[in-house]
Length: 121
Image (tube, rainbow, N blue to C red):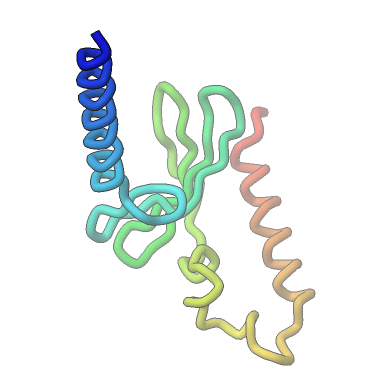
């Protein structure tokens, strides 16, 4: 009886280990989403149960999409550099002497634009 329990336990351990290894192989590294060639999901923010705002990189453009259960709509475009990780950024925001107030104003303007496009009227 003990030998049977040991065999079943070992078999279960092997199966769970294989499932874990397969999940590690299948899982893609990255932040929010998966990248497929020149298409990548850069950022996603859920607004309601079935509605999200998603930033998608298509070739060299960052497109802002409103996604619901029924359809997808283009809300606008953004600078691709705004969504790069800080180590890869090449603009002057990270350089010494850059004026942070200009960045705050640009971000506020962008957020106001998104609010106007996504609010129900």
